[in-house]
Amino acid sequence: MGRGTGLMGKGPCCPVWGITIAAVLLCVLEAACPLWATPQSTLWAAPKKRKRNDTDICKLNLKMPGRKFEAGKAIRVDVEFENICLEPLVIWSSGFWLNHMLVVTDVKGKEATLTKLGKECRSRFSPGGARDSNVRILVGPGDVRLVGKGIDLTKYYKLDSGKYRVQAVYEERMAGLSLRIVSNRVAFDIK
Image (cartoon, rainbow, N blue to C red; front, side):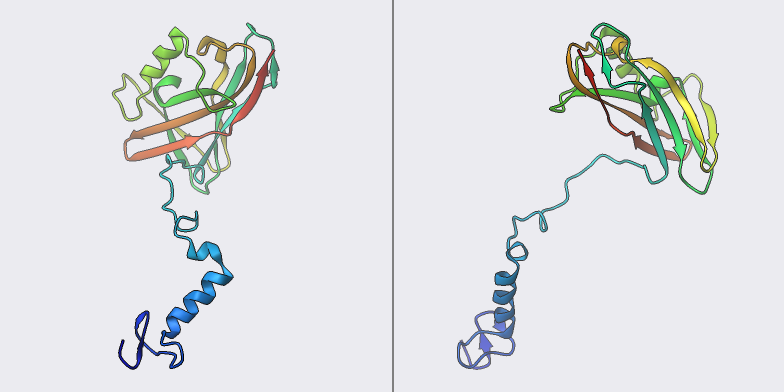
């Protein structure tokens, strides 16, 4: 190590210890903030890849009239769009299941078992897929538009006694629109 360089390479060097000012600052920062010095910390970790959610454009609201239900009885939900932008928003209606999906999970996040009808509806979900007909719906700024009323979850999922959560997803890619919105999550119990 020559005169004027320290342990961290080139740069101003402390004549007593033979290390650069940068090395001293690094040691001070490591002592003062251990997270800064820990590459494995969440501060330095690469962000997890998440599914897109355009809730800054539009909200998808999931509403459920109650939170406690009897096993074998209907469990109904309503799904609505709420435009929170200052501009009108175009959504496409192709029948509910082509660009909407309801997902029921237990408290551990495992999806409940789909019924035969539930599997058929899930297989129809195809954002941007072929359609026989589409209806263009204009949702004005601040407007709310009901897109699914009284959908009975028990027709689409086998739900035994337990604690569950339900969420709705709208996803569409057509006519210059690429939109994915995930609703609020609603918890409910079946006794």
